[in-house]
Length: 346
Image (cartoon, rainbow, N blue to C red; front, top):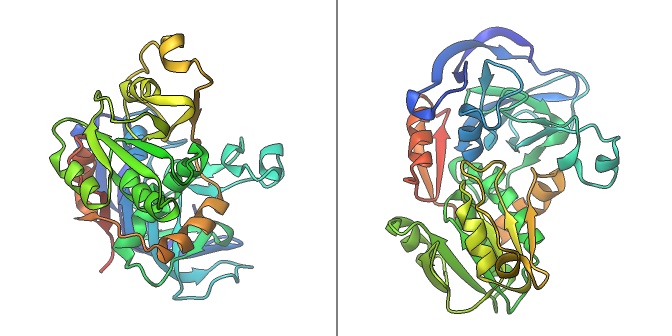
């Protein structure tokens, strides 16, 4: 990223470490300069995602260091690079995990730019939103529906978009039962989408045993049954989405799955392995296990208007930019109700 004369505040990762070591440092950096076809965005809010934990702790390390993390970005267009004209100065835009794709490879040509071998990811391969300014190709920015305030809109850009993709891949239909394992930023949005799109369906929520606040939120958002991860639900699941960072819920979801059902794993990495599976108990009868890899622009373009139509009501906990380490520690410990969001600019 080219930089120009003005200064901005940013929380920067210099080296991977346990998040408890408070690795993000508040620094002054030159403001970025938009290149050809790019826009410079003044960041007002940036969501805090579990992927940032994977980056910080080395499971999904940034392609280079130092790096500014953050890929749930909401801000205003401040300046246009040469050739950029899709947005005007002052327009509110969002930036998501996918930052660029080649558009030419077999995956891109099939509409699967999330699998592009040379794709770039916001906050991993290029500087992200834990800063007062960022730049992005205008083709990878999205208008934000007016219904949402900046802080509400931020988690929609990843927790919402990737959750929408996972729900679509799950094969959920009206009249069926969907299981959600883990009830954090993404799941609390997915349940709202599922209740809207499938009014005759049911949603069963599984959490850690001691997460009363998460269970209370799930109940308020319309969960039809709530239990702990190891519990047997009152009926088999037709499909399930695993949002957790650990392996055991995958096995539990497969055990509770109906014949011909599908479990979708909505995680880039797991902090613990998936335990050994017994073929007869967990996989036979044509059960499926599918991963979700990243998102496409189409996911965001479809989801954001839908979120406004429903309307989604994101539950957010707000932190200052210089409290990003604290927000990430609380996220790791499962102590965030809904989604954590950094308030970057007043």
